[in-house]
Image 1: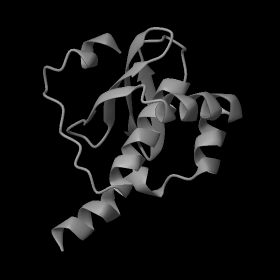
Image 2: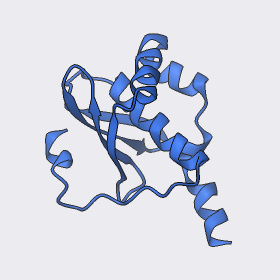
Image 3: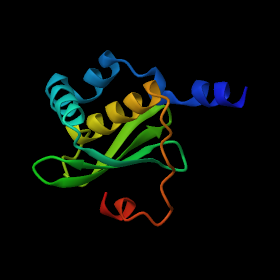
Image 4: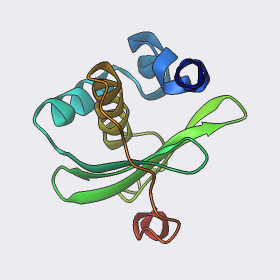
Length: 118
């Protein structure tokens, strides 16, 4: 019962390709998908408020924090794109892949350095 409630309360579980494309655009979704498929997402963790935190290895290694505020997706990424980016998409897709495989994702420590980088 508790596990079912967790599944129901996880907004990432409900995201569709359409949602992601509207949020960041087709090109960023394509780039983020490529990053996730090649294993660029490292040390994925949940934040205490239900967001995601990850290292994403692209042209450089970026800290990326993605979550929901007032029901809307947000992204804070060290790439400094100024908006949602392919690194956030890669983190989301990696998390969804973990859900599908029933793999647990650890909770980030409150002093995780990635919080200070984004």
